[in-house]
Length: 297
Image (cartoon, rainbow, N blue to C red):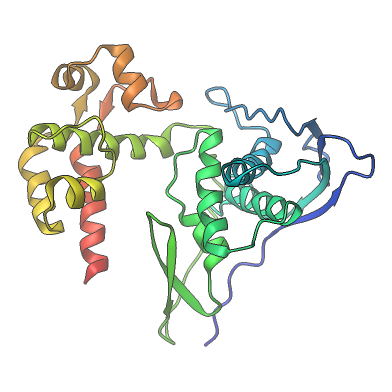
């Protein structure tokens, strides 16, 4: 049996500007997406207003900005204008990572234009962090599989740093993919970031309840290995022992952390989760840790 990835894609036609100007000019072959241009030194990525979808060009700009920021850290580089025509057939908001695909394509094109070595792991890492510019706080799974996939294999993806290990599938494996026809844009709602926020708060609460400094810890793996220095199974037991409630309210968490409402929102939430008043910390933390335990076996 052979395995084949889905055939949908993002295609870019890219060229440096013939006018030697400082403009990024983007054109989408689908007329419903408006053309866009901006000065290369004034890239502005606008997160969507609540309940609205981001403009398509903002995803492209995420990839450009991510590569530019990396190149800037490496030293001075010569900026030059360029033009891009964008085509693609990935259904938007369908769970097939059309937004991440556009960010990855943009990062790859920008890296090539500005002569950044095309290291797949670096591109996956930069693409993952680049999407944060639009307000989506993801870990990098979509970007990792886009750059690091191996034909005929599934991938075991790990983070910090982003990396992927090919896993050969059994010959009788079957995947069933169904289209629910329901759209869900991860940057247009708080659902995606809500899970990230709950993991972050759970981590900080566990640190505080174990008399550790909570301000500088944000990830469960960091808490386990760097702060508490315990095994995963011990962390699982600690979550069950200390995070006793199914739902924590914003008010009680503010009291525990001794934070005002404004401080709580600024330090623990993201712009599109500031309206949240209830948090499922126990469930979210156990989901992450128990998933790690299963993968370790």
